[in-house]
Amino acid sequence: MADEPETPQETKLTRSKLRWAQEGRFLTGKMSRPQDQRLPPGQHLTRDWPTLDLGVTPNISQQHWRLDVYGAVEDPIFWDFAQFVSQPQSTITSDIHCVTSWSRYDNRWMGVATRDLLAVCRPREDTRYVVLHSYDGYTTNLALDDFGAQDALLAHSWSGAPLAAEHGGPVRLVVPHLYFWKSAKWLQAIEFLTEDAPGYWEVRGYHNRGDPWSEQRYSGD
Ligand SMILES: Nc1nc2c(c(=O)[nH]1)N[C@H]1C(S)=C(S)[C@@H](COP(=O)(O)O)O[C@H]1N2
Ligand SMILES: [Mo]
Image (cartoon, rainbow, N blue to C red; front, top):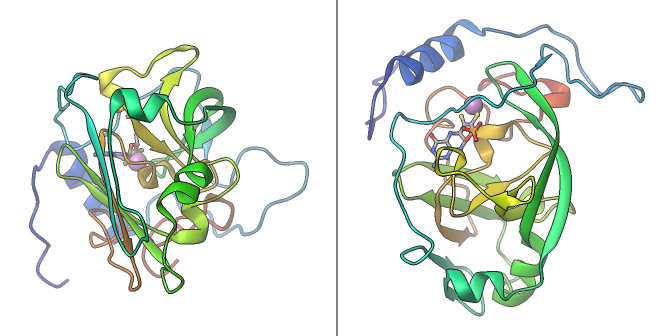
């Protein structure tokens, strides 16, 4: 294995997840989504909501939160929380699929649909990728089309209440059709790019796209 990339924080969980990528843990070898199936292959259902992150919870109040949108866009954005919640609001119920093999159904999110954000910042014609930057130093990358999916949003509420700090409040990304590590918590900035730039887990053995229905858990799956 090549040198492991530099780590902002290292915890027991981040070390386990690095090892699982190396071992191919939780892979079932099943592919594609049967019509009648709601649970992706290799996943089990949980009713509670586990917390997964790098081991730190940034404590950002709504008052101090800012969102910076920059890079290959016509109109960069710099919003405070009041400006963010004055955008058109969407309520979307979706399932969570975490690569560590738990799934959680029927999460009701409220926030700004990524499509509505794209309408404001207007990515340039050659823009293909997005990198999310978070207040804990975490990053994750997405294809522009995945970021702009119908049911993707920047969420500030869950189940009708402000999103809890441990789950990424004030604002997190939610991209339901990909494994949940793509859904950056404590969102700080959105960078638009013409070339791909793999994020924290993507350079540590996790798949670049992360589609749970074809079990894109690890690089090379
Ligand atoms: N900023 C940030 N976002 C993050 C993470 C993180 O460590 N930092 N972990 C990711 C992973 S691996 C998962 S599974 C989900 C977990 O979200 P939850 O703690 O709300 O369940 O957040 C994702 N977003
Ligand atoms: Mo995860």
